[in-house]
Amino acid sequence: MTDVLYDLHSAEGVLQVAGYNMGKEEDLNAYYEAILMNHNITQAQFDSSL
Image (cartoon, rainbow, N blue to C red; front, side, top):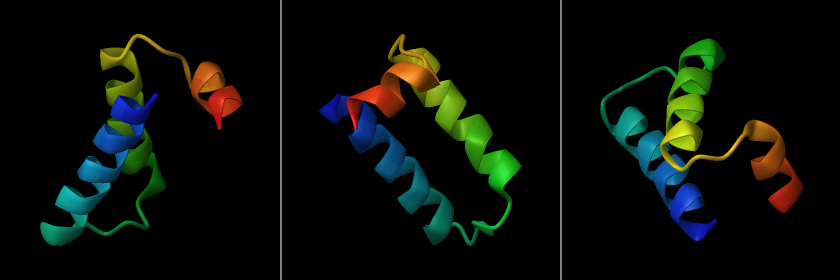
């Protein structure tokens, strides 16, 4: 699960450095969904692991 957290935080950092408006939650959710799919886990699995 640490790999997933690393990827999520890295994506947030890259978006912030690029000047991305973190207020666009629907866009950020698309990144999260892609990362979770890459790790073959669902949002529910991720949420229950926290």
